[in-house]
Amino acid sequence: MSDALAAPPREQGWTRIVIALVAFLLLSHAPVVRAAAPVVDTLVLLVPALAACFIAGWRRGGSSALALAWAALAGLLLAIPSRAGSEAYTDLARSWGVLVAGALGLVCILGWRRQFLGRALAAVGIAALIAAIGMAFASHAAGRIEDVFARELQLRNSTVLAQWARGFPDANFAPAVREWAARRALQLQQASESFAAPLYPALLALESLAACALAWGLYHRMSRARLGAALAPFRFFRFSDELIWALVAGMTITVLPALDAMRVVGANLVVFFGALYALRGFGVIAWFYPQPTLGAQLAASAAAVVLLPVSLPLAVGLGVTDTWIDWRRRVRTANSPAGPGATR
Image 1: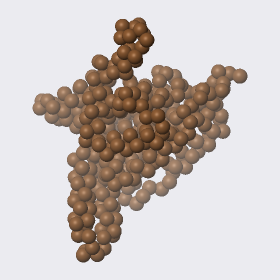
Image 2: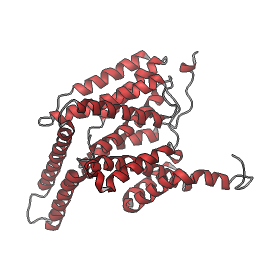
Image 3: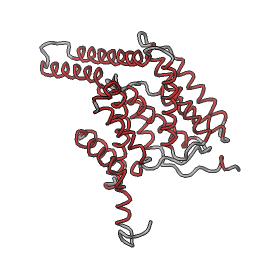
Image 4: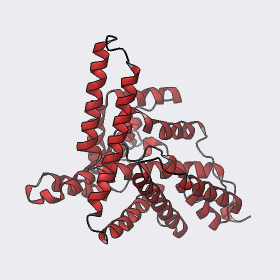
């Protein structure tokens, strides 16, 4: 038996990946997330990425039938007719999903980097580069694409507002609730216009990374042909320390008046890499305060979301300082039998 078809190492089971899958598919439809997420129907990102993993696995001795089945499923999903009035947006979302999936398959076939995150970042980067080259040949393409996402977000907010209005048909019923709903709808619309539309590249890249991670985890639970190492537990999440310079560059571009023309680019860099460092910081927190059961982990995650105004800055700070301090290594060294001076 070849190495590619050897018995796979023990994965982390199905429970957590199914919970993550359900969250990825459903949370994007929540009103607050829906007002900012570039892609709501996240299957458009997930299924092509999963098909790309199976095709890359087939190249390494995996099942050709599974590769063909997932490729056909991705094709059928992309062939579903667009919603009336959202043809341009749907074409953009589907094109981006295919670009990321193709790039992910390419880096997996070529074997670039062993760890998943390096491959996923490379895939998103290649897709973004191809998209940028394509936009360079069309005048004002970047502005038109932003307008497409802005119109889609406005349409979603209008739909939410109409649903809330139907939910309170009687003007005399709960006027305070009606007023609260109207304020919330206005806030969502303002957030979409000022935040989500200009930052769609960073938000779309983050959604794509999540889709690639889910596709990677699902693939390695359904196939015996390995593409790389399994995803490590979240408490071990980290990445190359050199990425701190991308965050620094984004912050510099954002705050310097001389670079005002590139402020949107800097803001996108800050959002994307800031989110990565926030995840790294939450990984540090999970390392310090491990939750022994799945229920406790879900409760801790829910508490972090509820306390987001506090937990997010804390996580970003821990993630950034982990670049130099390496909190987890310090804890391991301090707890080693030979004491703080022990050699690793």
